[in-house]
Length: 350
Ligand SMILES: [Zn+2]
Image 1 (tube, protein in one colour):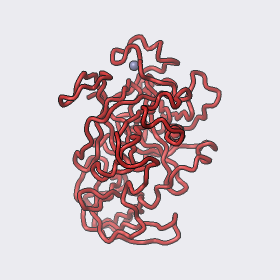
Image 2 (image 1 turned 30 degrees about the vertical axis):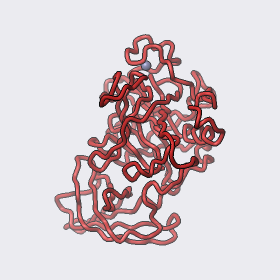
Image 3 (image 1 turned 90 degrees about the vertical axis):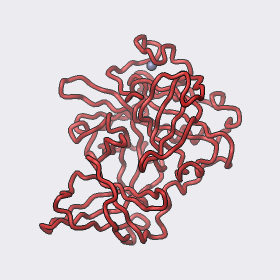
C-alpha cells in the first residue's frame, strides 16, 4: 500500500483529472454536505450524524513546505492533553522538527475559498514513529472555535516521563499509555533522551489534570525504535482508564462501518464510507483494513468506525484511527472491496 500525500492543492475533486486511483471520485461527499441520507440504513440517526460532524471538525489540512520550495499536502486530527492541543498525523506527512516549522494548518477548510477557515502554524514536534507511521505536533495559535469544541481530554492517559542519565541530567517529556496483551506500555519520544547514558525512568500519572501525582513502577524498555521507546510499567493508578474505555453512542453489535474524513488532493474536507475487512495487531499497534475511498492528501485523516462494538477488536474500543496508506484493489485477502480501494489505518484512542 502507498502513503497518500498530495503534491497539489485542488479546489474541487472534479478537477483532479490526473487522479488514477478514483478518477470520478464517486462516493466522496463534501463534509458540509454530509447528511443522514449518506449514512447506511441502520446508522441513519441524528445522534450519529452529530457525532461524525463533531469529530470531523477536528480534521485539519496540513501543508508542509519542503526544502526545494515545493509543498506537500496531508491531513491531521486535533487531540487534547490538559490545556495542550496537538495534532496527530503520519510520520510521512510530518517527520521532523523542520517539517513542523514549515507547516501550515487549515481548520474548518470545508469549501473552496472557504471564508470560515482558521489558519495556524506548526510549533513543536512532540515525537513520532516511522515504524508505526505516526507523528504528533503542537500548533499556534489555537483557534477559538477549537477551544470551544469540548474535545475529550486525554491527559489521564498521558503520563509525565522523566529520564535519568548517568551524568545526573534528567529530561522530561509526556508519554502515551496503552495496554497491549495484558502489559501496560508507555510510548515516549527519544528526542531528548540519551539512551546510551540512561539509568532509569520515572513515570507519573496526573489525576484530574494535575491535582494529584501518582507514580507507576517502571520495569524496563521493552522495545526501541528510531524515534521512540516503549517502556513497560506496572502499578498503574486506578483512575487511568484502559485506552478505549470510552463508550460509543451506539448499541453494541451490528456492523462496524469505517468512514474517512480527510483532505484528498489537498482540497476541501471530504467524507467517504467503506466496509471493514480486518482489525488486527501488528507489533504494538492496532490496524484496521477497510475499503473507504482515499486519495493522495488523505494521509493523516480521521477514520471513524461507526456502529458495531469495537471492544471486541484487539482491546481498542474508541473506534478512532488515523488513515495511513491506501491502494487500488478489487479484492483484499479474498474479500471483494466493491469500492476498488483498500486502506490501512492505525487505531488510536479518543
Ligand atoms: Zn483522487
